[in-house]
Every structure is written in structure tokens, then in C-alpha cells.
Length: 193
Image (cartoon, rainbow, N blue to C red; front, side):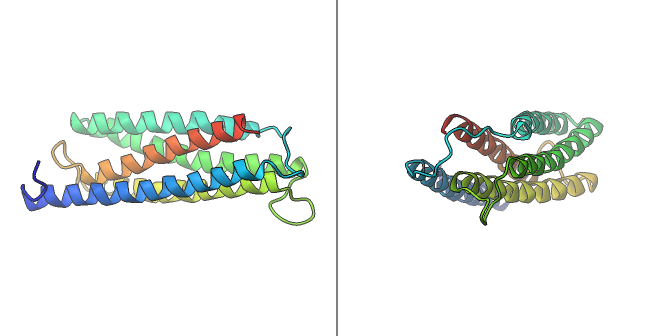
């Protein structure tokens, strides 16, 4: 396919999708670097090998999976001109994102109760990596929530139709990426001790 052909709207859509994928690939490389550093650091003598992941982090996996499903339902509803269902599913997805962040901080409280802080005399390199990885992921969820908020506002302004869903699709792609990223990070941290 010749990428120079098509309407201005089609070319703009392809360019925006390509830029999003470039950003996602760079984020994948960043998180791959942090998880690689986690693996390399695991040979340190002060490395914790018997830590338990907070239950809140496990619950976060379910929250993120459900949020991806609700966003898929919203997209399906929008394509079928079911605006009330699309609205409710978008709002549920947004709420689940906020619940995810709250849950993450609950997990941090559990880690602190176990006696591990991010830095200082009660810190440990293992837990510092977990804090770093989870906090950076939370920042990306916040970006995803901002994108969802823009989508919700544009949805209320009737900007999206079955034929014109570019902004919705870009936000959904990023949200699903953040979801898959959390699954990877959780299972990596859970199984690689």
C-alpha cells in the first residue's frame, strides 16, 4: 500500500497511529531496561528472594483486564451507534483506572508495613526496583486516564461516529498497552524472585 495515497484525513490518521506506536515501542524498551536491571541486580548479596507481592497488586491485574474489556465494549457500542452503552462503558473504564491507581498505593502501604521504603535506612534494592517500576507504570496510567478523559469529553460532544473514531482508537490502543504492560510487570515481578 502506498502510504502517500488517500485523503488528508486518512494520511493524518496513519501518521498519528504510527507516532503512537513509536512511542509505545520506546516505552517497551524503557521497561525492558528496568526489568533487565532487576534481573542483573538479583545477583547482589542483599537481594530479597522471599518477598511477597502485595495482594493489592494481584487485584490490580483483574482491574486492568476488566477495564480493557469495558473499553472494548465501549468501542463496539460506538461502532453500533449505541451511545448510552458507549458512555457508560467509557465512564466505567475511567473509574477502573482510578481504582487501579488507588489499589497500587494500597500495595505500597503493604510494602511499607512490611518494613521496606523506597529509600533510606529501611529500603532494600529489591523493593526500590518494585517501587520504581510500579510508580513509572502509574504515571503511564495517569496519561491513559487523561487520554480517556479527552475521549469522554469528545464523546459527549458527539465527535466520534462509526466512521470517525481516530481519537478513540488512539486512546484505546494506549490504554490496552498500559494494561498489557501491567500484566507483564506483575507476572515478571511475581515469578522472577
